[in-house]
Image 1 (cartoon, rainbow, N blue to C red):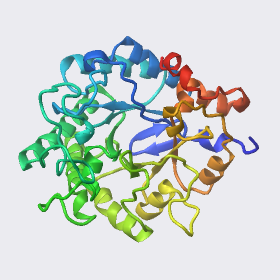
Image 2 (image 1 turned 90 degrees about the vertical axis):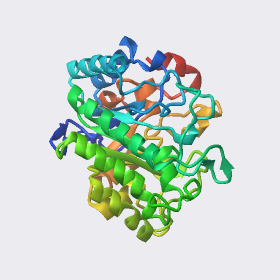
Image 3 (image 1 turned 180 degrees about the vertical axis):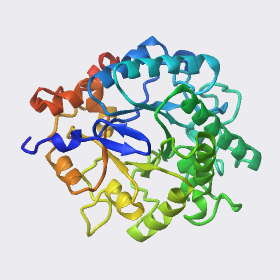
Image 4 (image 1 turned 120 degrees about the vertical axis):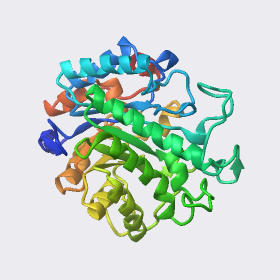
Length: 368
């Protein structure tokens, strides 16, 4: 690695939160919280990454206060006395290590298959009953059901602030419920929550406004979003910079403080004719801070993991070059941080060559 990593280790301020560096732990589902309650092992897992030098931890997806948010019995809630007590212990351990942490609130929508997850007797929910274009698996959400989901985000965000977390991230990416409202392939509604690209942002803006009302003006609120869906990696909600600007305007106005722009490979330009990636374009069009993510520190994207392939350690030179140009403000690290809990400290110390590659067979041991 020829470029100095020093720029990534400068402080950054988000609202009233001052982070020691630009390294973010990306949210990664672990399925290690039986009965949706995070235990001592979860607290230790996040503490190790704080000790390893991460500037901000964004937790694995957690369920907002709604009965059919989850599709997995081992994914944690962010509501209910026992789960919140567990998260209080996680917070305590991270703070002991001098870290900063935010929960990610994640409603899976109709990616929750019938009979799956907690409250399996209840049907999943999505804007039009579509899990993907042309695949109807349920009925459109009623106005009351929409209100209840929105309130669930607000309740859990309030819990996060009351417990002492440093902010909250709303998962609006990857084909889950917020993204199902964004995408015309899964949102065919003809009421105020459907219609053109701008109208389809209403569910997200209602969630953001409800969260903002619950936590006040100074508590950081991050929105994670993506063009791609797990139902279709080639989809683009906004096919041009002009469309992207229109899409982002109502989200910005609703109260987002930072956009977490999910791509599979951070180095790929978002539109022809420009080298900017999705985070770069989002920052340029909104003026807000952005987080870039996507195979940072590795040479293959996460899909190779599902195929049983390893990802080797990759140089950070291009990432640092993009950062120095001011294209984004923060950098989220995923799989590399699973196998290298001290990733941030090692990079800062110039020990890049000592980093461990990501091997799928090592995952079971590394998730600790």
